[in-house]
Structure formats: structure tokens, C-alpha cells
Image 1 (cartoon, rainbow, N blue to C red):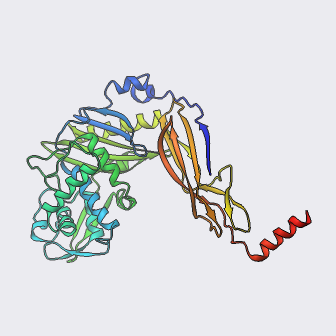
Image 2 (image 1 turned 90 degrees about the vertical axis):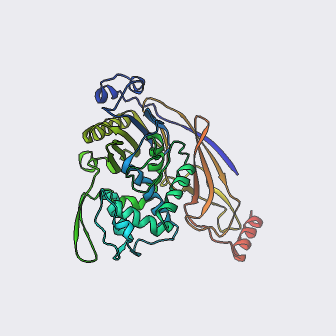
Image 3 (image 1 turned 90 degrees about the horizontal axis):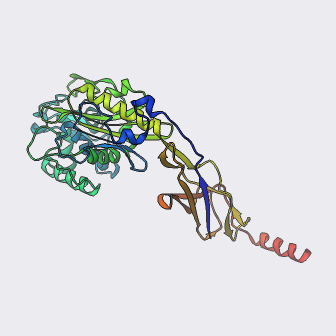
Length: 387
């Protein structure tokens, strides 16, 4: 059973880029610069991966501690796969405790909780915690870095090479704004990341009862109300860098600024890009998980011969605010035989934007259908005879 129907976006024109940027059209902004004193920048829609704004986006350059986006990705992957747990206690090595730069001053030989080490990386960019976790996940930092490069390649990052898991200066390591955006977008798929990303100030308590004060290096979580995550970086060679994300009106954006001349430049440029994105783009809901589809799905051998269905989750289509793309849905029902339980996956629905597949969502039963009994069949036969 297949069904096809079309839903069009309502036209919605939002002439706001002049207010936000001083330009009159989106095209003018894209051909000019949104950033101040930055070497490279990239702004994208998180859901679709579509680029909104780019500036020298594939230029290879050092990214300092922004490299920890990939470090955190591999750690969260290990948690998701069950290779480590947040409650695990790990013993810190001499190598990990000797890291310079940003740190929480881990003591070698003491045991620390994985959860606390992750928090220290996200909040205050702790180099010692990065190395401690890399050794736990991969056995050594060298092996961990090899996995970082493998992961980057698998994500389509063609202008990235890692030499360590901290971003401390090392020859032959680089990335670019576009690749960082891809990596950061992959990191924030781990919902556990948001458990830590908006912590502003917290004490890190050591097993020997020492405390180290942690302050979030991402000032946007206080300066910009829509921002709920990010990773900063700075070295003299890399300049001031920032990968961040913000969400507003069902639209999540990912922004990257590399090589800014000052800390204020990276934050101000990021805000300017976010404001531009939110003013001129939208995510239109095209499937609502709380709304049943127009047609029920057929069920064989049940007390009822059909069941109401709905999308398993919401689906959105990204576009410029002044555009109305054609959105079509292709629904496929599975061959259903009773019993069918509520929320059981019973089919799929494909979402097309201007003829291109952009999303596939499971269709689930909105109710249940019990298996027909002998008595049910007998009553059906009796009705036929009565008629």
C-alpha cells in the first residue's frame, strides 16, 4: 500500500536582514562579510546540513582547543557504545597530569569519575582530562588521535588532520571552518553533551578534597540567550576560535569562527551570523507526531480492519524565509497482521523538498488492534447471512 500527497509551504517573507546587518538582501550579505577580523567562518543549519554563510571555509589552519570537539565525540561514542560508563572511575597517569595550558590539575595516581572529566573538558577545556580520557578509551593518546583522524574522514572532513587530543601547538595539525562545523554537528547529536554545555561556574572536586574552580570559556551562553553549547580555542598561531550552536523557533544553527583577532571578535561575529540566520531562514514543520495521517492502514485478521497511524517524530524542512519549496510525502504501509500494538512501527514516510529526499520517518500505530477470535469470525459470517 502506497500513498502520495503534496503539502506546500505557506509563503512567508521576512525582510529583516537589513535590520540585522545593514544589507537589503540575503544575497548581498552572502557576497559580503558578516564577521569582524576573522580569517574563516561557516554557518549551517544543523538539521539539513545546508550552508547559510561561508567565508574562506576550506582554508586549512590551526584550531587550538576547538580540536576537543573531536575528542569529546570519541568519548561520547564510547559511552554510547557501552565501552565506558559515566560512573566509571579511572586512574590518572603521569602523562595526563603533566599537560600544560587549560587544566583542572588532575593528580596522577588518583581515581576520577568519567562524568567529571567530560564536564571539565566542556566547561573549562581541561587538557589533562582530555589525555586521561583518551588513554582510557584507546589505550594511548597516539591511538586515540589515529581514531580522531579516522572519525573525521568518515564525516567527510577533507581538510582536517589531528596530531593530539588537546589542540596544544604541534606541527602538521589543522582543520577548516567547514570541517569543524561538520564535526561539531556530529558531537551535539549526543544529547548528553547538553548536560554540561550551559554550566557557567562550578567547582571541580578532587578525590583528595582539593577544588579547582571551572568557568565556562564559551561566553555566549550568558551573552546570547539562544546559545546552548560551544567550544572555544586560542593559541597565538590559531588566534581566537569558536564553534557554537543556538536554537530558536525549531531552528538549530551551527556556527564556526576561526582566526579572530580578539575574543570579542569571535563572539560578536558569531552573534551576527546567528542573528542573520534566524532572521532569514526557517524550519517549517511538515510532519507532526501528534497528528494522524489522513488514511488508516489496513490490518488483516483483527477485530478491526484498519488502524489510525501517525509519524513517529516531527519532521521539518529548512528553507529561506522568503522561499516556498514544494514539499511532498511518500507513505509506505507494511503488510499488517493482527495483533497490532499502539506505537508499533507500521510503515515509513519519506519527505521530499523540491523532489529531493530530505528525511525518512517511521509511521507508528496510533492505537491497537486485537487479533480476531473465532467468535468474531462467526459474527461476521452471521452478519453476511442476515444481509
